[in-house]
Image (cartoon, rainbow, N blue to C red; front, side, top):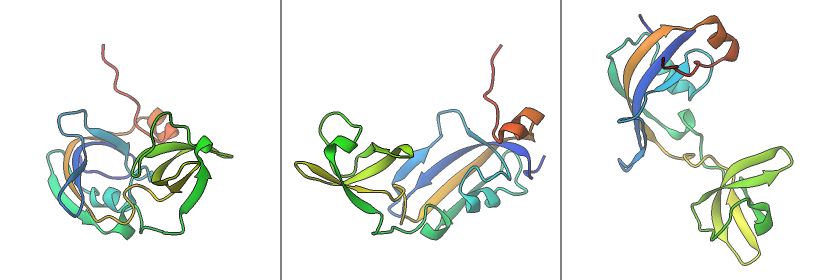
Length: 158
């Protein structure tokens, strides 16, 4: 079966940055799964899977605009340390929860002061060119329930 809209796709991936360092990998774990055609992942990566079948392997390199966006230097803010929902020592580069009026969201610590913290709202991978090595592991038609929920249902074991 070829990947098309409303397919459930399971795939292994290895994501590397422009230095060749592994950022994320599903190898040695359960494959990642998603409902194709429902914008549940990076759009360019999703489109690259169109027409692929079980066993297909390929690589795709995405520039920042096609992945997590360019780094926006205006997406930085100084907040009080109390706003950060993190116990213990804060260090630049840490991803921590920030309490906002919309709820809690992850942000990256840019600079730490005695009373304030400079935080970065950019996605941690913004501004990076990323290469994805993909292997398609499973393709099947989504169930009615999966289409209703917009995502694959968890596998159950009997």
